[in-house]
Length: 326
Image 1 (cartoon, rainbow, N blue to C red):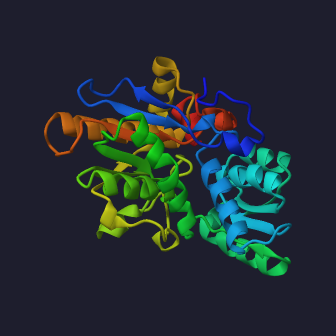
Image 2: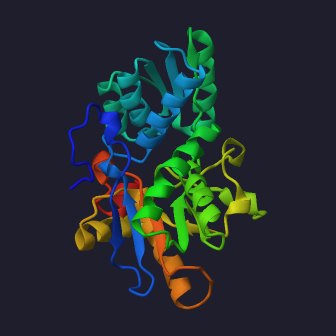
């Protein structure tokens, strides 16, 4: 059941205002709430930046009407941009590493976008390079660059953060979110800290990701199956501000896999790996608050479930751990 009670003229008007739902495995004394971003029309949190960034670039002249958006993306951002581009009269081209979800790539094409793959072993770094090369080859093309564009953070400052605060009457003790571009966490954190300066901000990454380098850690790089969050090259994560972050939680793939199954069977959440990582990290933060290990202004934790597991069924998210990681 959505919050929209009047007919809407466009799917863009359905972006945002997603439900905030309690995660029941968390301590009763310190509830955890998750924004269910699969309720967006493109079924992920990235719909927010797709609509917000294209509208902003059209408004300030960075993007011309009828121009082209070229973006390196793991998939959900492409879908979010494609939904918005088709409604706002611009073309879309996406550069996607091969290993990412086939379902996401099919959906981008269905929405009218062109998808260009780069080798998985070259990571997002090569996808970013290729996007800029393509933009130079095309007329009236722009790379929004979700990894570096402040509009990414601004979108969540203006939408996701306020929605969570309004639902909880401002009583937010901690904000916990996985970081890929880090736009979601940074935007929500900035909004939270302006209103509750003592709120705790916790970043989440998969085991094998290297966000720890921002905090002077000797992070051990490794492969991981958790999609949409994490990094192998912190130089590409220009939006991440370690000064806003109190803690970094690192979640192994095995725990993520088990939590995806638990969330589905016990709580009815058909969510994917980044959501499971966020759930585990948020619950860990809630237990720390309950035990008095950290001080927060309110006994509550807010996190985000970025998308649905349905986009990853071909990858075996609900099969055995060996099948998922094989």
